[in-house]
Amino acid sequence: MDANVRNAVVLTGDVHRNWANDIKVDYKDPTSPVVGSELVCTSITSTGDGTGSTTDPTMAWNPHLTTPG
Image 1: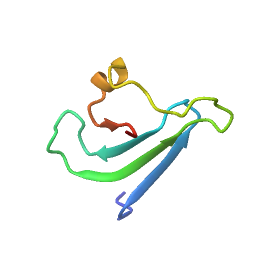
Image 2 (image 1 turned 90 degrees about the vertical axis):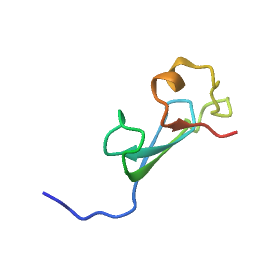
Image 3 (image 1 turned 135 degrees about the horizontal axis):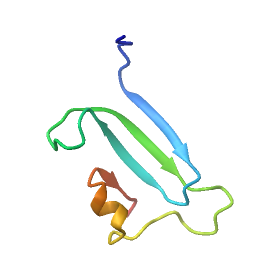
Image 4 (image 1 turned 60 degrees about the vertical axis):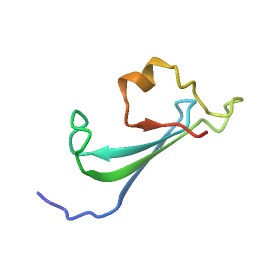
Protein backbone atom coordinates (compact mmCIF):
# COMPACT_ATOMS: atom_id res chain seq x y z
CA MET A 1 0.00 0.00 0.00
CA ASP A 2 1.34 3.44 -0.91
CA ALA A 3 0.71 5.92 1.90
CA ASN A 4 1.91 8.91 -0.17
CA VAL A 5 4.10 10.13 2.70
CA ARG A 6 6.25 13.11 1.73
CA ASN A 7 9.25 14.42 3.64
CA ALA A 8 9.41 11.48 6.05
CA VAL A 9 11.60 11.91 9.13
CA VAL A 10 12.61 9.08 11.45
CA LEU A 11 13.86 9.93 14.96
CA THR A 12 16.01 7.37 16.76
CA GLY A 13 18.57 7.42 19.49
CA ASP A 14 20.34 6.00 22.49
CA VAL A 15 23.24 4.63 20.49
CA HIS A 16 25.76 7.07 22.02
CA ARG A 17 26.33 8.65 18.60
CA ASN A 18 24.81 11.44 16.54
CA TRP A 19 24.04 10.80 12.89
CA ALA A 20 21.99 12.37 10.17
CA ASN A 21 21.10 9.84 7.51
CA ASP A 22 19.45 9.90 4.13
CA ILE A 23 16.87 7.15 3.77
CA LYS A 24 17.25 5.82 0.24
CA VAL A 25 15.20 3.44 -1.84
CA ASP A 26 18.31 1.32 -2.52
CA TYR A 27 21.51 1.83 -0.51
CA LYS A 28 23.53 -0.22 -3.02
CA ASP A 29 22.81 2.41 -5.68
CA PRO A 30 24.41 5.79 -4.83
CA THR A 31 22.07 7.54 -7.29
CA SER A 32 18.97 6.06 -5.65
CA PRO A 33 16.42 8.70 -4.62
CA VAL A 34 16.25 9.92 -1.03
CA VAL A 35 12.80 9.26 0.42
CA GLY A 36 13.33 10.61 3.93
CA SER A 37 15.74 11.58 6.68
CA GLU A 38 16.81 9.86 9.88
CA LEU A 39 18.07 11.83 12.85
CA VAL A 40 19.92 9.76 15.44
CA CYS A 41 20.65 11.30 18.83
CA THR A 42 22.92 10.22 21.62
CA SER A 43 21.63 9.15 25.00
CA ILE A 44 20.66 12.00 27.30
CA THR A 45 22.74 10.36 30.04
CA SER A 46 25.83 9.95 27.86
CA THR A 47 28.89 11.87 28.97
CA GLY A 48 30.28 12.12 25.43
CA ASP A 49 29.37 14.61 22.75
CA GLY A 50 27.96 11.93 20.45
CA THR A 51 30.45 12.38 17.65
CA GLY A 52 32.18 9.39 16.17
CA SER A 53 35.46 8.90 14.45
CA THR A 54 35.44 9.13 10.67
CA THR A 55 37.74 6.09 10.74
CA ASP A 56 35.12 4.03 12.58
CA PRO A 57 34.34 0.89 10.51
CA THR A 58 30.64 1.75 10.76
CA MET A 59 31.26 4.72 8.46
CA ALA A 60 32.96 2.56 5.82
CA TRP A 61 30.16 -0.01 5.96
CA ASN A 62 27.51 2.72 5.67
CA PRO A 63 28.69 5.46 3.30
CA HIS A 64 25.30 7.17 3.54
CA LEU A 65 25.94 8.13 7.19
CA THR A 66 27.09 11.61 8.08
CA THR A 67 28.43 12.77 11.41
CA PRO A 68 28.40 16.25 12.88
CA GLY A 69 31.66 18.08 12.22
